[in-house]
Image (cartoon, rainbow, N blue to C red; front, side, top):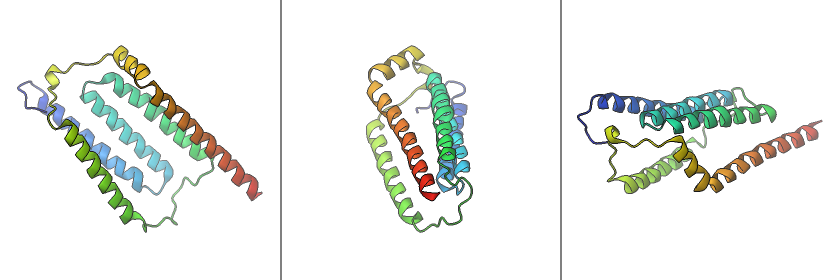
Length: 178
């Protein structure tokens, strides 16, 4: 972002930074929580702070879609699948940290790769929030359902298949135990 003489720019950057730190911290808590339900609730905080970042960037429609779809539907689907499959949702003391170091190394490598990709792709792009053009819901909807309709539908089928697979696996395990 370029420095601007407009009033409130410092506050916008401060709120953006605060929301980014909340998203980063809660994302770390998602992957380090030993309780699955707590991890899902930290995921709600992460996705909510991302929605707040969208609001700061003047993308109100995308922020509400983030809240409705990801916070409202995906996290509920995740919790529903956890409860339906009778997966252990409480604290699991038998989990150990043997694989924490290799997982951290892979996470750092992926973060470095993604960071390098974003910097290489957008190193010369500057956003002036005072002159930002805000997209309407109609423009966003037209783009999603024309250019991105196939990935959108593939993702919905993938989520449905994952839920059906979890149900089938839990039923097979239950039938075999009795």
